[in-house]
Length: 331
Ligand code: AMP
Ligand code: AMP
Image 1 (cartoon, rainbow, N blue to C red):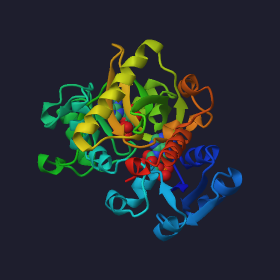
Image 2: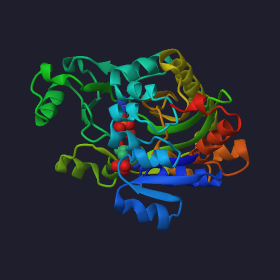
Image 3: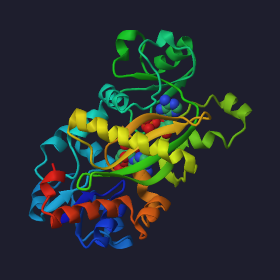
Image 4: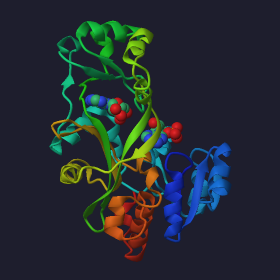
């Protein structure tokens, strides 16, 4: 068995982790990416050109580790039809990609979520508007009243309520972003806290670099395009909040979709009342784990050796191979 993934996002970490656990590795993707994975950072034993070279991956006895890039480039329909074994529960992809299903899942997990406004005319405080299909925060906008909402929506060509389907209006929760990364071992039935990051976003993290007066003069609107990730260590008395949130999500997934296993991430903010408010779940490895190629403070506390999320995935696959339980974790 070889470990394969799409050449972008968190592939360096995944393939490095696989090699640390003595697997051979395969990267596939754009030709331009090849030197990154074979020469500058030699983590891929094989590099295949293509979005999803199914025949070659089958020949190489590969298991695909899904990432945000892989799912984005291939699309959920094709991922569901894949013949190459996939690590994780494909059913979770539907639930995370549909905002109303996602909300049902997070509600069942008893998490604190931002209020959702069904009708823009009910807006009575700051909101963040998430257009359908917007990824990584591109296309989001902030509004503070119904008038403000309609003025900004019009710029996107939305003139009345009929055109609002797929758009979600959420309460804007003031707090600092915290993205905990978890790993749920289906083999051992155990949740682990792997690491935590916050994102570095353009232009949200650029606006503070200019004085308020100029911000106003320039009429800048906020965007959240991810440029990188910054490691974070949480105030220790908040760790149980984050762990219980992860446990809740795993338990809810068992009831709703046959489970959630492998890496996942909750995306939210901590408010000044020390409350963790979650606005999104990613049911697979997130790129926020990338600062921790050599492990994080949390994985060090547990393992006493450098364990990244990528390596943890490989450890699980190895254990499954040894115990002849691969069919329990591949779909
Ligand atoms: P890419 O392969 O970089 O085009 O990314 C594919 C998807 O993964 C996009 O939706 C990105 O927003 C997301 N993504 C990529 N890198 C990161 C990152 N470092 N942090 C958070 N999300 C990311
Ligand atoms: P997302 O792509 O949904 O993870 O969101 C991109 C960014 O928007 C996040 O990193 C947050 O900074 C911000 N954000 C999203 N939803 C909310 C919310 N309900 N309240 C405050 N900030 C939010």
